[in-house]
Every structure is written in C-alpha cells, then in structure tokens.
Image (cartoon, rainbow, N blue to C red; front, side, top):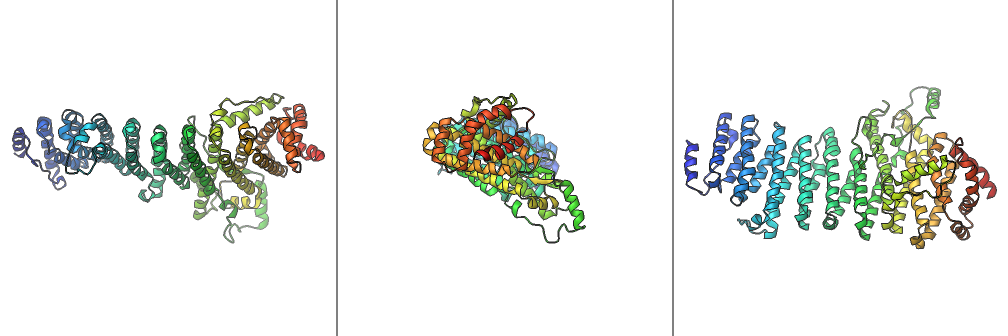
Length: 627
C-alpha cells in the first residue's frame, strides 16, 4: 500500500521532504527486502520526479549495503549502479545535492566483506563518479546550498573530488587486502588522470588523507596483520605517492617534498625489511626522475635526508651487544673451542639475504627465506626471543645500509653504470691488456653534474662512515663469534663484506670523478687530500687481511682503484706529488702512474694470477722497496 501510495504522489511531482527512511536493522529480512524493492521500483519508474528524495534513497541503500542477505545487497547495489550510471547522466543537476551520499553509499558496498565481487564493482563505480566531477565542474560551482562559506572555485573540490578520494581512503583503511589494494590503485589513478585540474591547496588536503595510510596508530594490533599492512598497502602507497610527485613535480615540489622525505625516513625506521628497502628505492626513483629539475635547496634537503637515514640505520649494536652472563656456558671449554674451530673459517655475509632489484629498479616482493625476519626464524635455538627481535632489527638496518649505498651510487652515476664499469675493467684484465679507454655510455645520465662539491662530500662522508663501521665489525672476530654463538644470522659467523667493499667503491668513484673534473678545480685540493687519506687507509687495511675469502671480496675494488689511478695523467700526478710530497700516498700514486703502467701490462692481467695475491705481493715488496 505504501509503495502504491508513494508512486501516486511521485506522479504529481516534487513534494518537499516526502521520502523518509526507516531503520532497516530492526526489520525482518522479508520486510527489508520489500523496502528495497519498493525503493528500486520508484527509481526505475519515477527517477525524473525524485529531487530532495535522493538523499533518503541513498540512506536506505546505505543500510542495505551492510546487510548479510545476498538478495538484498544485490538488488540495492543494482539500483545504486543504475542511479550512478543512468540517472546521474540524465539528471545530474537535479541529483547533485546527493552526489556525496551516492559516493558514501558505494563505499559502504565496497566495505561489505561478505560480497567481494560487489566490493570491486562498487570501487569501479566510484571511479566512474570521478568522470562526472571532471566533465561537469561548472555544475558544482553553480550549486548553492545552506553551506555558502565555500568559495565557488573550491566547491568542485569540497563537493566532488574530496568525497571521492576520502571514501576511497576509508575503503583502504577498512577492507581486506584485495579490496583495499584495488581502492588504493583507483585512488592514485584518479590523481594521475585528473590531478592537472587540482589547485595547490587541494593537494595539501588530499595528502593529509593519503598519509593516514602510514599512520602507525591506526595499524592493527596483531603483529602479523601489521607486517602484512606494511609490506603490501604501505609499500604500494609509497611507490604510488612517488609516481604522483614525479608527474606533478612543478606543483608538488613546494607542497609535498618535505612530507615525502619524512615518510621515506619513517619507512626505513620500521621493523619491516620490505618497507625499509622500498623506502630507499623510492628515494632513488624520486631523485633520478626529478633531479634535473631540483633547485639547490631541494638538493640540500635530499642529501640531508640520505645522511639522516644513514646515521640512524648504522647497526651500532652489532659491536656493543653482549650475551647475558653465564650464557653459552654449557659444555666444557675444550668442547666449545673444538666446535668453534671447525666452523671458524666459515663466514656468511649478513646481506646475503637481500633480494636483487627487478628490471624496473624496484625490489622484488619478499619470497621464502628472503627477509630478515625469516632469516631470524632459522637461527639456532640458543637465540632467545628478545635477542631474536633485536637481531632481526639489526639485520634490517644492515639491509638499509647496503640499499642506501646502492641508492647513492645509482643517483650519482645512474643505475647499472658502476656494475658495467666493473665488468669492463674485468674484461680488460682478462684480455691481458689494460683498456685505458673504458667508457660507460650512461655515466652522464647520473645526477653527478647537478650536485655541488659540498653535497658530494656530504654523501662521501656517509659512505665512508658506513665503510668504517663494516670494517670495524669485520675486524672484530671476537664479537662476530659471540653473535654467531648467540644464533645471529645463521650457522656461520656473520660479516659485512658487501657493505665494506661497496661503500668504499662508491666513495672512490666519486673522488676520482671529482679529481678528473675540470669544472671542480676549486675543490681539487680537498678532493686530493681526501683521496690520499682514503687510498692510504684502504691499502693499509688490505695488507692486514689474512682471510683468503676476505681478500677475494676486494678483487673488484682493487681493480677499480688501479684502473682509476692508471687513468690519471702524469701531469696531475706530478703536481699532486709536489703539493703533498710528505705523504706516503703521493709516492704510491706517482709509482702507480709510472711503474705500474709497465708492470701491470706484463704481469697483472695473466689469467692464472690471483689479483688479490698479486696486489698484496706487489704492495709489500715493490712499493716498500721504492718508498
């Protein structure tokens, strides 16, 4: 009777506040189903006559959207979809007052976990609503209501874009993985598609919503859910934010850059390996894609961000951790020593668990046995839970250190450039001839030319600090043994060989590049002094190495050092020797530039000769005699 009566009234045209909704939660399923069917019939037959009633209709469907009865949800959603795709198209000016209610209603359908297919379709319809806002901004500007304190030029944002993006953020924060991932994708698709129409202050409002995704206070309390949230949703959002920033750099550089750096810094502080690695990788992507347009101020902020990450992720506890008194005391001392002797020559790099980056530069998603947490789950049973937690956090810091070293190398010289240079140097050695014209075509694509000397020195300081820490750890056999006995990393004593060699290699590349750069003559004196100190320290350390595997780890590093020195002109070496004739390294450089050119051509590149053994012999004998 109500249905028939309502249809009669609707045929007479608009009646103010005619349609009223009733709380469906108190009704039986049969009555709820009838209510939805009555509203659906009104929409299908009298849509042109419904005006103020649209808000009440969406209110009814909003209740139906959270129902657990499939037939009720399906009918309500079909009708809502009909309104959004057909009625809005024909009668948008008459329905604009209920536009926000429609989007909120679709969001409620998306958040009903019992019907995942409906959730996905609801998100698609929210995406469709964005097209109305884009195509009809004037309708929002001309729309008047009781809320007249919004400027006309901002009404399209307040009543159009903001409700859409806000409801998508609600879907992301409320739904399970597959639905929230789709919601996240659509949210950033809308930004990328229509962002060119956004005002600068709109972006500020928008990213206040977006950064809620990373709000640690809103993360689930269960550790497993928190880890999944970080590895999936936070990780996805991080890359998407950086993509949007790159696309709209001119507008967002003032609005978003500080927040992006702060968010990247936050990511590497979390006890989640994938998120930490993605933080450094996103930093690399942002800088490589946009560095050419950075101002001096932005470059200063970028270098400061990398410096902060470096300093806060150095795993100092690796050197300071001590076992509790009496721990590992079971068994006789002789048994313990015998067991240790059988494994003391074995060593495993802490960073061996790091997954390589994919072809697009992004880290692979974690696989079995690839993360620090999974590595710690394999540790020996002697590791207690508090220690496992500490050790897992330390492993993540080691991961970030190595990733950041690679990030700096990729930023300064462009990705894969250094690897290609190492390969060409090695190929030249294997051809039994020094290739003095080794040239990497992509080197000028790096950001080196946009960085000031002081900024490069700041990055260099980060690299050398990381190198010296790794060197100190690798030289502390007693501490490494204690960590191994406590179950840290695995079945063999841990080391940081990759961090030790890669950080120094990147530092040497920067110094030698600056030393040969005619545009940096004002910095040459400092570069030379740094180069002498670094090379002296490195060669002195190499001479103390007794482990064959440790010396082998330095092979590419020594090859890089010798090749770079051989490319220095005789005039530069002569001049540097005059200015620094009291330095032992000036003599080494002079010697390498004159004697080694002949000596290496004769012996160094013989295929059966081990580079590490040769250099140790050469440095100990030839250089000491000449000096």
